[in-house]
Image (cartoon, rainbow over all chains, first blue to last red):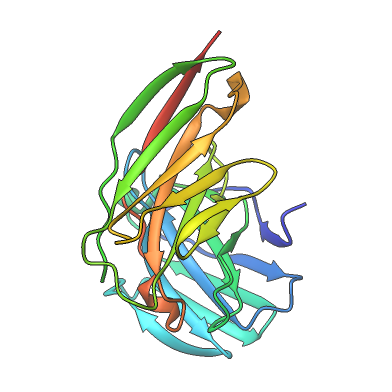
Length: 113
Length: 111
């Protein structure tokens, strides 16, 4: 229903695990984003890809590694996370330079144990 | 970056009109004003966007005065399902990295 699909919806992982979050947009947009939303905090912009090139990396720890293989897909690879990384991870897309708003997926609820 | 200020929370009742005001004193000439709605454990959803004067769609109206230093989101005849967090954003969308969310306004609708 949203045009932006995120999988999985829920993920529980240990601190030594490696996992990946997936995002797919069906809107023909040329920019994709990862946001982190911790409990009762504003959304924090993590990464931005425009035309499949990373244009923003907001001092995110290296244990988070984004990948954008094409304009429709975005991944967030996770390894050796900390409990404070538990949050809702949201993917969004937009058509840059056209004034189009962000379109969000419903996120992945990540719990690090 | 144009910073926005909006009330932390608001309460209202079903059937009332709700107005949420956002201040953005340092808005740039090419900045749009965009409002989003977010329910718990979901991504924000676009509500309305404007540049100046008044914009209306099927769910809300957006009022922007001539100086554009503030804007007001108007929700007519709210229902319980309008209980959510509402975010006001200012940005030109010429650069994706300029889209920064504030704390939003937590709107609670009572029967």
